[in-house]
Length: 381
Image (tube, rainbow, N blue to C red; front, side, top):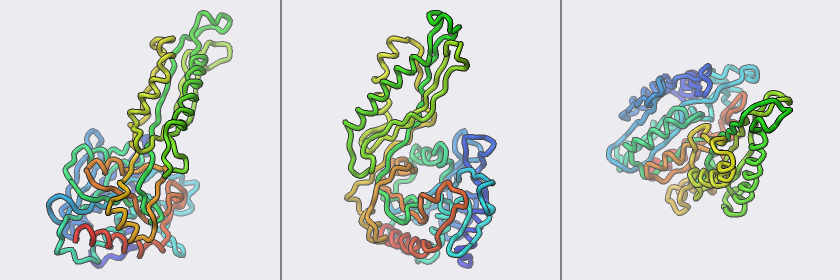
């Protein structure tokens, strides 16, 4: 392991496809990446535990541990990537290509490459006198269901004091982000010939009432809640898609609205669901059995780290950047359920994530390794 250079580590992990997708045609196992990481960290003296995810064949989590007992530091990341559009990539997504000061490849910053930073930092340190354990967490399916992080939180078999998730933040500590909810609101009416509207129940007309109620909810959310850490300081509700009807001369029998909700810290997904139901209760009463609300995916809670946390202070000192808040989601709320102060902090920029020709700017290599070494030194040694 000590003979492998940074480029070799990057090349080897990017070369193993590990796409996660809700489309079965794209979805892949992450077992190859998990096994590679187990090989890396076993050679560095870590004890590696690989766990299959329940009811998800081919999906695995890894926890690598150096030292014993509870507490210490957890360095975390996900092993999956998004799908890619071959027509928009100018390079092979699974071959690390260096051009100038950039390394191109799928997952270079989002975020398989982060594990190469961890491996390099660890092998440059003398960790024989650990006072607290150092753990590495590698999860599955962050890009879809976050099933890996949810499983780790539910099992709760590790209890670190602090955790850092290496998503691309430009090496700026992220201490807070909004949650994410995708909800389907379906109206089931009764179709019929448009010449006699009384013979049917028009789902579009009922959905019109739904849209009116939800517009009022949008306004209520902006008035009732405020968090100055965010550019948009309140929970948001977006009308994302609507589908209904099949012909102008038929009474519409079904209509579906898909909405996006972004809860802020202090406002849980459960609270927003209650507010959603309450706002539509009159329509439920007027049209019994017509209105159905369902999750399009399990809600992702908002996340916030205590601003007084020692982890934030150390990360700000190590990076030279003040902690910030962002609007995108990570596994942080689930890792935080382990009882640890949690930060999101990693190399690369979020604007490069999910983009053709994703790349790592090599200017991040030395600073990221030094930040990781600082945090390991502070919380484990």
